[in-house]
Structure formats: structure tokens, C-alpha cells
Length: 478
Image 1 (cartoon, rainbow, N blue to C red):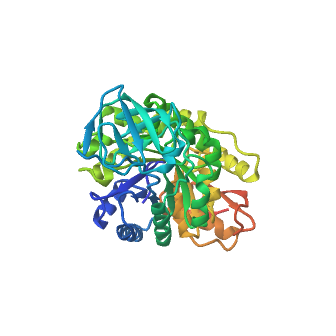
Image 2 (cartoon, rainbow, N blue to C red; image 1 turned 135 degrees about the horizontal axis):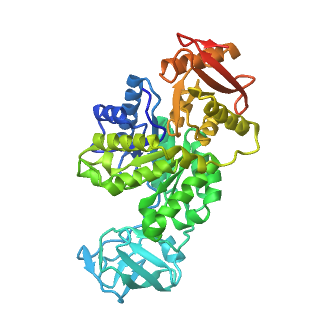
Image 3 (cartoon, rainbow, N blue to C red; image 1 turned 120 degrees about the vertical axis):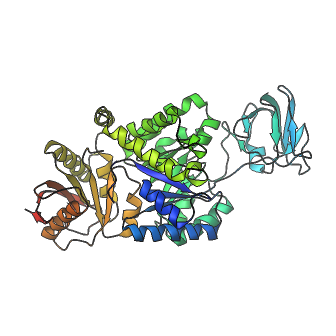
């Protein structure tokens, strides 16, 4: 099944979309990759979802990617004697290590790392920023605060710390257990939540050992400050605008989104834009005009994928949400201004043979108006480089490895096909032309350009370009 757009759609599964019939409907509507949120999914349910996705994959005959999203360190206050309390701006309120039920003047904070790390003047944002506190005194066991804004606090509300660098990794004990479980099922991508520093990826990468690629969710100011280092150690990035909009001034989020998207594109790393893209479609059949513009902006920016969260996981219209996002993306990519915007944001290639080949393939394909760029890739690197160029023509990634094809399903403009390795150069040309013909990218008499590494089956050795005519029955003509 060929998509009529280049940007990919990442759909979250949940109560509204967990059975195999619905997963198939979401795929048919346009979902390319499915997200399993481990914050709300136990291991048995996760295994069931993976099995259902793989069953749909087999039925449709197309590689489908799976992203397992780890919860990360969720920081929450304790419970109150009355369940909730009303505060007043200017009053003193304390968070401490006392496990007693909270009152209107204090509450337990069961996170000693916060009590030891917060300094005078730091902000503490409770319940997605609805309550803002500022620390006035700390001693390692309690944080005395002044209420700056907001008046309500209740049991187990989340705590965000935009000014505090916590000396803890991104993986909790729950995350480690979840990571082991999802890796056993063969998921393709693992998303790491609340990354603060590049070192936060080290433990996950050591555990993963290449069994899945790592996607860093950028949702903390500390991560934005060290973005270049995090990009270098990540396989992909996500602009997680929910917590990012809590921990940073909300008006700064659009600019940060562009900064992250462009930095990832320069590095040739996939980038996903997420959170509240079609939020109103949780309960409404039609999105707001602002939401349509939001999705369109991400597409114009050249993001690899746009993501649906509650819209597809728990909303009333999961299929319609995916179909709406698909239509928006298609319309943007047909817009006459779209190629110019994408071209203006294109980065210079690295001074490597593989990057030079990918640049040349795009320029030749666009100059000669070829039907497709066909890349042979075992590790996925050649596909990444081809997508980084953001060519106007489709990219067909041929790989003999199913896991590679699944991973590349997140990539902008890349149509993934599992195909046995070519035995020689003539066979390589024939296979490329046949796939382009059979998948609907080229007709008899059209031309495609092929990139590969010679000698064949040598990972990371992209060094060859070949233009080939597609014969009347899809066979290559040299």
C-alpha cells in the first residue's frame, strides 16, 4: 500500500484502539507507526498489542513500526488528609520528607532527590503548572515555598522542576523492567521520557544493545540547552510539547519546535512532533482550524512524523483522527509553496562519500524528473541519508532485513520494502525496477536512480549511483 504523502503518521494505541480490527482500520486510514504508551500499559497488554500489530503487518504485507514509550521519572506529591486543599497566593507552603497526610501548609514529597537538589529561587510547578511555587528555604529534608500563582492542590499531582537539574537518570526501576519486556517482543523504537542530559541515554543503549533504536523526547529545558549533544547520541527525537509547555514559557514552544526540527534534520535524525495536534477530535468529529494549522506547520517544517496521542488511544473518533491528519498532510505537500520551503531548510551534506552520493541522487532525480530513488540498505543508514535530502521524488528503501524496514517506516518520504539481497549488479537493477513498477512508483519506460554500496552486502559503504529504465513489465533495462 503506497502512501500519497511523505510525512509519516504515528498513532497511539489505547482503550479505543486496542483490538486487531481497529488497528487495521487505523493503518488503512494512514497510520505508519504505532505507539504503545508504557505509562498506561502493563506487560501482558503490551505483548498482546505487539502481536496484533504484527498480525496486521502480515495481513497488509507492509512493514509497520512499533514505538514503545517509557514512562520516565514521574514526580508527584503525596496525599492530603482531605484529598485536596485550597491555597492562597503569597502564603507559605512546604514540601517535606514527612510521610504524614498533607494539610493546607505542607505535603509529603516522596522524592529525596528533589529535596536535596532544589535551591532557593527555583520554581516548582504542580499539576501541569496550574500551581506555581517558588523555593525560599531548603535544607535537604524540606523545601519551604511561597505560592506564586494558582490556589489548588490535591492528591498525587505531578511536580515539574524547570530550574532544577536532578542527579538521576531517565530510567526508573519501572522503566528498566518495561524496557526488558518491550525488547523481548522486538519493538523497533523505544522512546525515553524526561531526558535531561546526553548521559541519560547511556544506560538504555547499554540495555538495548542494538535491539531497538532510541528516540529522545525533548520536554525539559535542560534537554533544550544540551540539544546538540543529545541529538548526537540519539537515533531520533520527539518534540514533546506537553511537558515542554509546562516547564518553559508556553509562548517559547513554537520556536523551540522549529529549533529541534531543524537541528534533527541537519543531523539526519528522524524527528516527531507530538502532543495535542488534533486534541479536540477526542470528542469532536472535526478539528479546530488552529489544530489543522498546527499539523500543517509541522509538515511544512519537514518533520518526519506527526503524532496522535489521546485522539487515537482514547478518543471517540480514532479512525477519523488518523484520516484527518492524513488529509491535512497530503494537502500541505500539494501546496505550491511546499517544495520551496523544504528546499530552503535543506542542510549542506557532510563531507563523506555516502552523503555526496545521496545529494547527487536527489539532484539527478529532480533534474531528470525520475520516478523514484531506490536505495539498498541493510543497516538503514543509506535510507536515513536519502531521507535527509528531502527529495521531491519518492524514496524506496529495499532491505533484506525486516527489522530495518520496520525502523525506517518512521522516516520522511521513505517507502520500505523487504527484498532479498541482490546477487550481483544486474540483479540489483532488476530488483529495483521491479519493485518500483509493482509498488506503483514507476511505469514501463520511466527511469529510476539506484544507490547502493559496492561490493554488495557491505554495511555503510554507499558509493554507487545507477540510472535505469523500467521495462514494460517492470524489468530493469540498462
